[in-house]
Length: 321
Length: 292
Image (cartoon, rainbow over all chains, first blue to last red; front, side, top):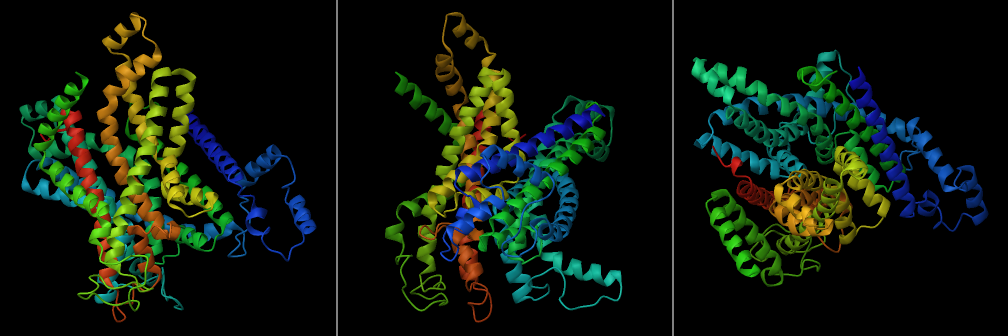
């Protein structure tokens, strides 16, 4: 219990630091919202701007503004999106489910596949299968997400039009039942998911392989072999289980990395998640939307980390709860 | 005397490096792109910032990869793009490794509250997904330029180096010769510059190579999202223009594969070559990693 509280508190402190960093960086770089969006508009008289500044609390001393900023951010008040003309929080939250859907499915599938393939390569280490396999993975993990996505689009949406070009659902359709809805969702998500999963596999097969190879060098593996334990049992009961722990720890960090992938992938496939929202915020110069989306993503990543911490503590009895 | 030592250690390094086939392959690929970057003006048939023909022409003998949406030669763009991509990668990696080494050595050597604060801060930056962080930074700086890109990637990318350097500093600090140096009255500065830095320099080199790969990936992502510098077109920016201005239909309604595939392939090959080199170097530094 003390462990959980300690971890939670540490994540909250992290978030507070992030908010402070963004505030002071933005202010020191002169990103005063009024400077940025209003001062160049000649139609607004200076008195009007002064009045607006006072109304939004921008005439207060910096530390008061900072306190306001912190309370607003912590209560989910991220301001208004200039492009969507709606509160940032609502816009981001509307898109969040799509991103979480992509991320969770691809984390689950890629973890299982990398686990099996990685153990297999480790078992076959030094052979041709291992050599070719690891080199292919190395190349895949070096390709940018968006390029991989573009290639999939070219092949499977243009030349062989099996999958749709964009979006998350067919527009203007009413579904007769839930299965039809899920089917359409998966049909649209197929290519984005493939992009994310393939990239992840390229990354984590190598990780799992090396982690297993490390375990195979341990003394207790020799003991198991000497006892006459079968090869399959050694591989999955002894080696893979112990190699799994660092993998779980890494999965915690993966969520953060995968957000990077999601932004690029969603942009290529025009998938209506948070990632594409960030792209729209960039092209429309919508700073508040960008800032709000960043904070919400940061919270999501911190939460995912917290959950992974708990799973690790549960799996590894050496960590005291 | 010192030069001799250096020569000898380089020769040793080279002889071990040669035994790594994948390391050599990586080096060959990287050198190919470095060659392309240096001799870009001689290799590129046209000026990549000038209109040469009608827009969106398919590949021909005249224009190997066709022309883009404003009639510039894509092949020349690709060759000049090598310069921008590699330069941003190496510059950003250099700065982030410098910052990381500084933070790592200081926190590892001094310990105590300084270490606690610095490492906490490192964790904060490390935990945040770097593309959103970079996008926000670019938005805060408000300008799209080559230097801002390098700056942004440097101030988000130093954390791995800091962690690695800190842990090696901690282990070197405890060794007998450092203690001996302390006993005869060597100052902190002497110990850091004469004992710690030379010992971690191979690690710093390997980290630097990986950071170049990471920085190039970040740059490609940011450029693709439209945050690149239009007067310094990188590979990522070529793909940005392909995505936003005609790459999907320039091939008689079909995607112009000649516009989309080459830049991505260049990015992937360069990054892969850097990873191969990094691995080969790691194997030299840490012989335990060699293939069993």
